[in-house]
Image (cartoon, helix red, strand yellow):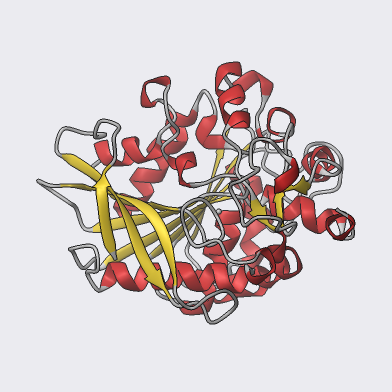
Length: 349
């Protein structure tokens, strides 16, 4: 426990907030659209930036059998989430980005990042920002090479929170995607949300919700209970039942990511593909909320553009603000507006 508490508070909070082949059996839940099929997959990855080389990334792959389209989206969740963030269970599918994209005729591969869920779980300190980005890079290569049955010419990375930081690092390092959709992230954390997270970070083995889901006794896997309602959701734009379900399904992340968070920042200067940044106007984690601490202004699309434009000098940058939404904007009551903007932007690439 002393080891975990010695980690710098800001780094821990930022990691959590910015905190995400063989084909298995079909997913049990009904397909998002009549001709869409989803299946669980495992993609082998050889980690050279930390972790065992004989590793894998687990995901759920959804395609339309009649018309698979021309682009596949690779969806990366934020810290404390697994791939279910993109296909949030229950509630009639209202909070599922996967189902929305499927109805729009777009293929998706939602993944558990390395060290999360059913992907390989290395010792926590072996999981870093570079190793996370490299694992995603190998997934992209697998999609282009037809490892899942089809070779994709267009690949778009889509991230949430820490998954967005991973996506930015991957895109700027490997230059292998056709578009980048960043949600719930910016280059300047908001202390309003970070303050609600500090003090709640604890070893995953000490949290009943995550105990037993990580390597036994590994205190470098962390959990953050009792923060979602205050930090990730906006009271006026969320269903209390969804917030409760979100809290109950939290997952563990790794402490190994902490020291390597800042490496994503210079990578964005090398991104030269279309980029869409989408945030909720009430995001306490990555936007200014009247506390003067964040340099990211999410009041509207134009202010967000001005805040982020300097970090993407080579990219074709677009921005979008979902009014009233909090950090986990997929779970906002008005998420449909964001989903519509996202799939139309992907279609235009």
